[in-house]
Structure formats: structure tokens, C-alpha cells
Length: 82
Image (cartoon, rainbow, N blue to C red; front, side):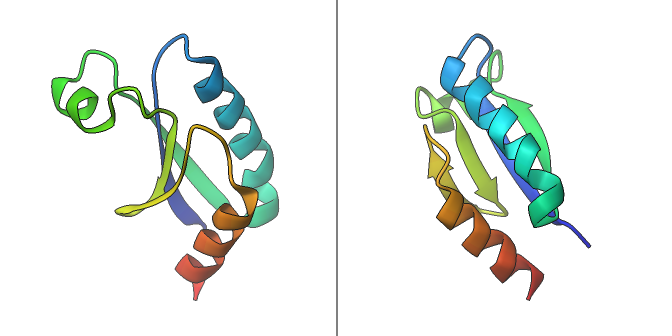
């Protein structure tokens, strides 16, 4: 069963677009699925994430912010599957 990740993003954020593209390219190789969650117009999510986006998470654990940390992603997905 693939690991479940969440990617918090903002509309028009180039860092968000870059991470979303790279994550989607790695999904099949590393066996995970990602829910893209826009924080725009969601007061609760904007308060939590503000300008920290993109934020990639697995469960309640942050994998990385702003830029993809491939090593941290691999470790998180591997741990989730074990």
C-alpha cells in the first residue's frame, strides 16, 4: 500500500509548483501518493502554514519545507511502509 503524503501549497507560488512537480515525478518510484492541499482562502491553514509553503508532510510529521529534501522523503516513506 502506498504511503500517504500531504503537500500544502499556495496558488502562484513557484516553490510550490516546483515541489509538486518533483514529488509527482518521484511518486511511482518511491510508491507514495500525495494529496495537494491549497491553503489559500482557508483561515485555519493560513494561520498554521502562512508563508512556510510548500510544506510536505506524512501524517503529522513535516518532511520538508520550501525545497524538496529527497533524502528525508525517502526516509519518511520507507519508515511509513515498515
